[in-house]
Amino acid sequence: MNVQCCIFCKIIAGQVPCTKIYENEHVLAFMDAGPVSEGHVLVVLKQHTTRLDLTDPLEMAELAKVLPKLAGSVKDAMVADGYNVLCNNGSSAGQVVEHMHFHIIPRKENDGVFNQWPSFQYPEGKADTIAEKIRRNLTL
Ligand code: 5GP
Ligand code: ZN
Image: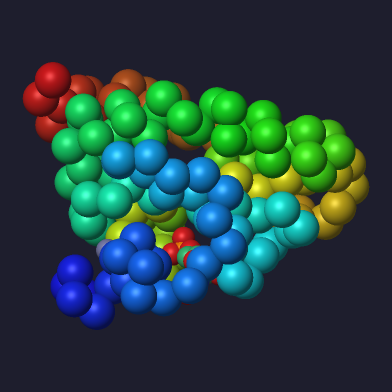
């Protein structure tokens, strides 16, 4: 998918309508058209990147500046008990729209959304081995 056929770029450009929540020079927040729960909001950077790890950290900082207040306003407006902030990266992780975005999904106790959080235990030593691999790939 390129910028020309990216649905979120079209929304940002005003070529496709959206229900807008907030906009500034860098960021747009709007209602998700296929919500997981009522009040589900998407937050996008106006600059097109496909994934979080391909996003300029300084642009990401602009999103981070507004994310806490957006999350709070979603939670309060929906009288939610909590919320998930999600960023799906890659189709294996459930990403459908290849323009990096954050979901704010308001949650109620026992709402049945994301019922399972699959977790397991590492065998002895494996977490250390994996952590070392990750550290070797980290260039900060
Ligand atoms: P993803 O699975 O890529 O993390 O999430 C993409 C999200 O974008 C989905 O929740 C989907 O409902 C939403 N979405 C896809 N197309 C449109 C659209 O044209 N307008 C709006 N407002 N949301 C969209
Ligand atoms: Zn885009």
